[in-house]
Length: 368
Image (cartoon, rainbow, N blue to C red):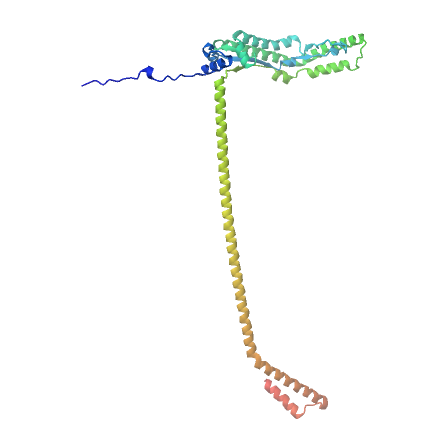
């Protein structure tokens, strides 16, 4: 009993098929464009999986705090600038709330940004890719500490807003009083420079302050502090999403085409059914018209037969009554002659002669 021997092909006899990767393809293109050997092109590793798996990108967003500051014009401060000058004078800004109320509103924003810079890292590469330096990378181990500090800042902001809302009327009156002093000083400065001061200068400045002063709803709703979280969207994922979008678009177009086909088929079937119904109605109408025409024709025939029967009966009756009519005519003529004879006899003799009287008696007897 001999054992079977399994032989394997020699590896050096198999055809070698090189595997070309994307890196090799990009290296070959770069070597061709630069006139170098593709072996001289270095492969630089670029891997963002660590940033993707070990942390997240966070951006602190503070909105609405611009309502706490306003820009003044120079005339409101009593300064008259030269008209023809190449020097730029930027008007100053002022806080519409007293500092003891405005600073507690701005401090939570600084706390949130400080916490973001404390627990995060910035990478110029990701900033270049994102096209914004707002997002910073926070490791998962530090996210809890950052969130705790951020929530504390949000609580401080809520308390500061509530303090301002509770003393809203007093704060506005205090600001109006302060701007009254500024307006009076501005009038004196403008008058000292021999500038033209409008009569209602102070009233207009106070109206501007009251219109620019933030309302209760603006303080309550516009001052917001939040942080946004982002993850890296890789190029392969973008290509896959684009591919999926193309497939979804193709599927939607196919579904829309199928829907249009079904809709067209339904319209055709409805049209066929409508035409069939119209044909049936037209056939029924023609059948009813034919039946009505037959009934009308039958009635006309019956009416003609009846008229013919009446005409025949009338002719037969005329044939039967013809001798009687002749006799009646003769009798009428005879009666007329007798009556005329009796009238003449009575006119001549005042009595009827014997022959006339006999004729009258015969007529009376005949009629009886």
